[in-house]
Length: 309
Image (cartoon, rainbow, N blue to C red; front, side, top):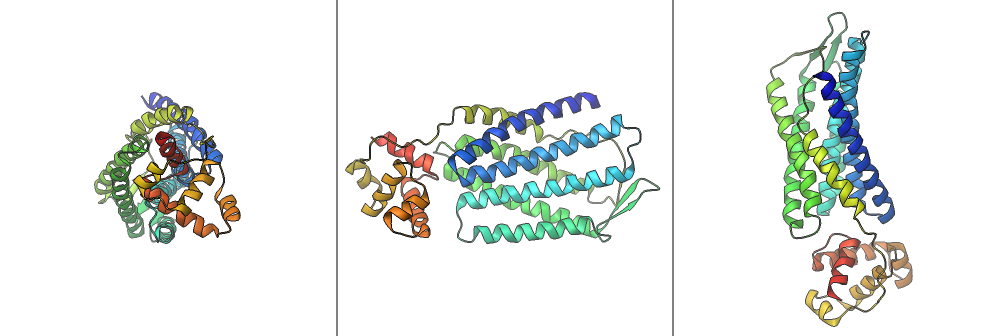
């Protein structure tokens, strides 16, 4: 049974790497910040699965698998688990475009590093190699509690984002991410309260099934199909935007200029140079345009303009 679980996990990881490769390629080609943040989340979770499979494989197939090796691999898994939560939180904060979103992400990141320090400190965890036991201290549970709180914030922000993009093409993309994140959240909360009374962890086979891997697998297949059909935002042939479109969304003349530049495939830096304005001003104008049109990216903006021509 353990070997079947390892085979399943390897299949999940292969599909995950295929989906991740597509996400990274498109993030680089389009320069979209949200795809870059998403790629980080997906990469960390995939790496976490790799560590989980490694733990199972070592215990089952390596007779000299020591408690010390188990201790360090388990520590890596805990750190990655925490990192996935913070990366997910950062993704949703950035997607909402909060004014102080980056500062909030930085605070959560610093506190995550403090939590990691607690886990590896004598205050959090002590290792008894002679008895193959890890003693869990107060620091470990403080870090675990902070992880659950961070995860809760991420899930709330995720569902809020889903309500905002429900009528856009990002609905399925966001829904899929929330699917496996929500299962992982329930899994984490259940594990936290189930193990809260424990003071020790004993060297044993990692035979538990990671339920969040199921929606992750399904989402990975969806992502592969999604990115295979994902069109690059090519410049539009026409530089004209109908007056009806401009009036409908209350687009100003200055904003129209920026839309035309985007239609020509210009980058933010190109637009700033050609219109003799700062890069910050370009970003502000684009943010206002996105808000008026109900879109979140250049790709969505071009799709909206195309549909109106």
